[in-house]
Image (cartoon, rainbow, N blue to C red):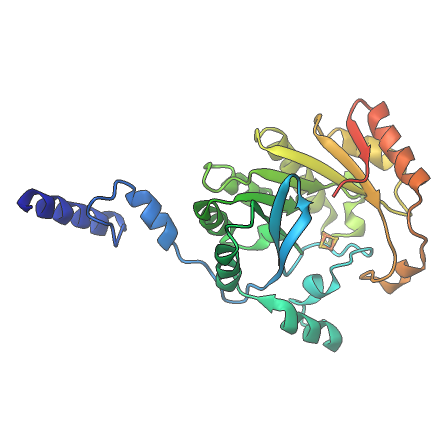
Length: 286
Ligand code: SF4
């Protein structure tokens, strides 16, 4: 008993010195306790929650967290409420819709915890989830719950990807990276073309070298060409590269609603081009 008390005391002293607190006397996992106590930033961070999805995480039933905010402004984007919600100039209808649908990170985690028995994973999507400063903590928390994590990214934040890949606790289990247009055309959707191109290249390299299962995703946009595919191919490895349909209807730039939806033929031609370049092109995908 005395020994146990001494042991507990020493553990608590060590905990105090190192920042670990609330360690149980018999617990050998002080680090895990610390991890679960890491504070998550809620202020200003908004997330839309899809409680259950059968199509967003390959092979898993998943919840999807859509983080508000994005550094790009793709005119074809269908996530208007998420992308514009942080902008002071967001139209009133967007602000209203966003305030009804968005919750904070702690609430999102509570929902996930409650559904842990029916879920296999959680998809972090957007907007752009890598803009969230505490994404490493969030991923660690989700993994502590026992769920896998898929990250959807536009590749504009390689610094965050590097940080996530530093430990297995914060590394996603699966990544889907968007490849939108040829790297030199990112100025059409980003405020700083050079920075966007550099970020895209760095992110692609990090993902290629990460050892994490991944896929690439490209929309068959009305203005994409085989030259774009050829320019993007150098960023990819043999992972699946899905070509998906562009659909008008609720585009960020309303003028894009005037374009026709992609035809199967257009999607097939781009996928063929990808395969002709020796890559793993496929029509469709999630
Ligand atoms: S990167 Fe995605 S969320 Fe951001 S504007 Fe483009 S399509 Fe929308």
